[in-house]
Amino acid sequence: MTTPATGIGPFDLTGRVALITGASRGIGRAIAIALAHAGASIAAMSRTASDNESLVAEIGPEHAIAISGDVNSRADNERAVAETVAHFGHLDIYVPVAGTNRRKKIVDVTEDDYDFVVGTNLRGLYFGCQAATKAMTPADGSARAISGKIITVGSLASVQGVAPGMSAYAASKGGVALLTKALAVELAPHNIQANCIAPGFILTDLNRNFIGVEPRKTWVLSRIPAGRFGAPVDVSPTAVFLAGGASDFVTGQVIAVDGGFLAGSDWNQGA
Image (cartoon, rainbow, N blue to C red; front, side):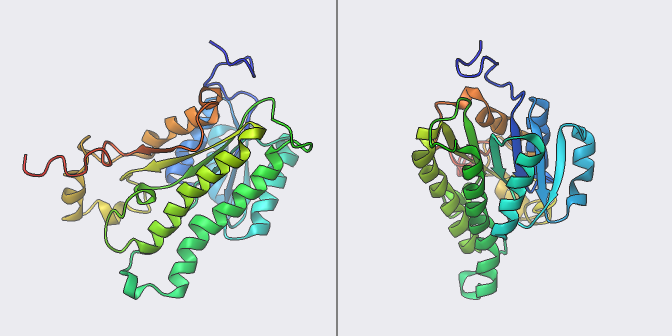
């Protein structure tokens, strides 16, 4: 089976170019490797290009480059897109994964806390999507021959409050989900699809010390029907689907990869 527009398999990313932020570790790294295995060339952005040296080495320097830049900087986002296009010739897939959090009760959140979390998770992502959209949209405003893809990374907090201490994070991730839907509507005439992956409780270096210790660990696991935490590799196949021709008629969606948490978060209570 092939897609009519490209003549290649619906999960084959051969010839496509992806720019990924936050690709040096965790979910971003898993997505970068999965897209590369599907055939895509990868531009990996992080604050320090050297953070992605091992990723570039694993994928192969002929198919991957590391770009230094801070997603909080509009200029850095624009430069990352420009460097990607200069090196590979075009941009087809944009995956802004970089994100952060400061867990505090709302009465304790400072302006610096709010600006740091929302600036990284939403403002930085917004201007990254803006730069990527400019590069992916044909100059005459027509539809692309081969679909373009924007794949944002939200959270369970994109759709529910989840837990105390998440107000700034939820504000940012809720914004990511609605921004993705707005992009889907605006960019559809250009054959660019925008979708959001909402990972559940995924064990990464960033959150291992928060969700992986008792008593929080038992509390969380009791609310995941799958009975386990996710791993970054549980998220990456969804990104491959959303990056290729298989998802050309899928846009504006928030897709949870959460082991069933949102489907029945209290499923094990009183059993």
